[in-house]
Length: 256
Image (cartoon, rainbow, N blue to C red; front, top):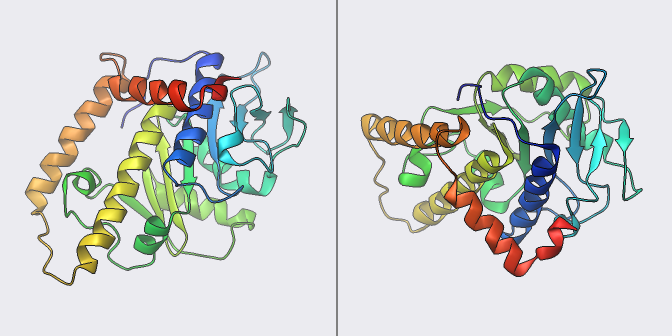
């Protein structure tokens, strides 16, 4: 996924990040007040790095565009409308990824039952269907080292991630990057569906039909072309527009 995306305004990034928090909650992919979705803002007037994060202690369904906290690359608070600060330890992985991957606007980390289950098996995601084929040969892996509080682990995560946009954190969960918040969410929801479908298919006790490498690679390239068309500014994103309309209908306060 090359760089070269059309830049968004700060207000658009705030809206989209708040929307991602709410959508993750609606999909049942949140984990209480834990895990995070972060977004890179344009650099400040003096070149300072700025990122948005959820206020500490709020559920994902309580996050709004207005209460998102602005932090620097260390997690130090720059602006905190809600007044609760952030989980600085939770931002350590995000900050390392953001600082290493300037092509990523958004970093999205989840602990879902299906995602943790698939991250806990050696084979990881299998190309069993259209959802999972898009990730064929495009997933990085990082071995579990305990709760991610060790700052030295950040370097290993970044090294393991390389230039990929999806990572299985072994025995832990998933990490997804996006050139926009919208792309990160779509990758995350398709990865979650892939994990759920794999758990369901293998749980039937029948023989799974694994796609050939050629078909899986062809499908992955088809998805790649579609993502590129939207992220490089040549095509609108009707899926993200539809997701925002869903929030307008069921959780319009995400903008507040």
